[in-house]
Amino acid sequence: MSASPSPHPALSSPLHLAVALDGAGWHPAAWREPSARPRDLLTAAYWTDIVQEAERGLLDFVTIEDAFGLQSSQPTEADGRTDEVRGRLDAVLIAARVAPLTRHIGLVPTVVATHTEPFHISKAIATLDYVSTGRAGLRIQVSARSNEAAHVGRRPFPSFPAFRSLRGEDLDRPDVRELTAELFDEAGDHIEAVRRLWDSWEDGAEIRDVTTGRFIDREKLHYIDFESRHFNVKGPSITPRPPQGQPVVSALAHGSVPFQLVARSTDIGYVTPHDTGQAAAVIDEIRAEQAAAGRAAEPLHIFGDLVVFLDDDPAAAAARRDRLDRLAGRPYTSDAKVFTGTPAQLADLLLAWQQTGLSGFRLRPAVIGHDLTAITRALVPELQSRGAFRNAYEADTLRGLLGLARPANRYATV
Image (cartoon, rainbow, N blue to C red; front, side, top):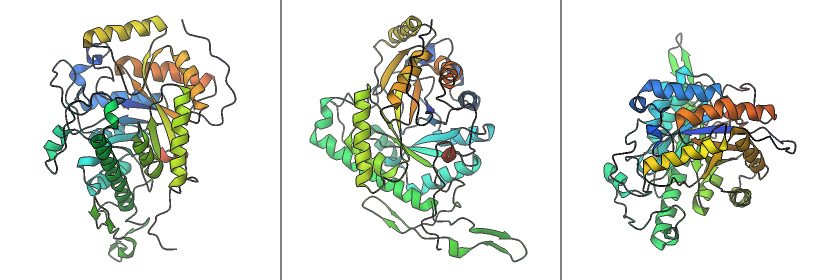
């Protein structure tokens, strides 16, 4: 039995909706549900099916999780468990495989800035933008895991054996604060280098004139000569400027230091408030940082993240979560709010939270085989019935879906 929709004030703009895709779902026991496809998780068909389902729901984009180490129940180290999903495909390559089989939905793979060179990421995402005809983005992620650093071998990271909770008191330790600041400062430089590389080819740099034998206009290729404490990148890129000019850059943020990264460097920030008061406070902090960075006039989307267990009956959703917890051997917890209820109740929550200034939401399906279709086939129609979500795709690029103009090239001469 669904709850009746409650009245809402007139919406200043429609909601934006995305889903975060990770394995069989965000609950660690999701792979054991009847609707899961554990034998298919490492196949192209699985990822194509779920992204096409998200597109049927007219969602703005999907994000695809990635990392430099196996999944773990611990935030900073491997856990050695063998009863949960371990192993994943490369997120950028998943997006590139799915791109030709979709038409409208944005594709936003996760990239780990801590262990990846900006030049490699710039050409990978630019290529994805070409393959998808303008639907690429990226989610920048940092990594403080010592085991992931060991895979790359460029630098050691300290181990934080007591660092167990993203909201724990260990976040205030001086060594944790110092490393956090360093990693996010590096991520900011990473984004800046990537953005400059995307602009290192002006629009129209490829002449492709068979008669004259001129393929490119060398005057429209630029050295970026980017230097910082973390990177020294000469450029230009080997890939022409992407169709969107600048693919969409996003990041997940839990505290003041990552809020600064979102405010200064991204197009979308994902935040994890647990109520409207926290949402309003987070938005105020990010907007203040945005103004301090001189970006007050630039559009910056702030999306709220929620893990969702959706069923037609709230009791069924709660029972499903309890059953999964028993299978996992522990209660499920998350950095984000965990919502358990009906699509109509979730619509109430999203519309109430939108009034705080959130422009959209990134939903994390607890079980992809169940909760993704509940989003696309129940939540979306509920929002459409309230005039809060699109009835058709209105743009062919991810920037267009998000209302972001195609930016001018910083190196182009008038």
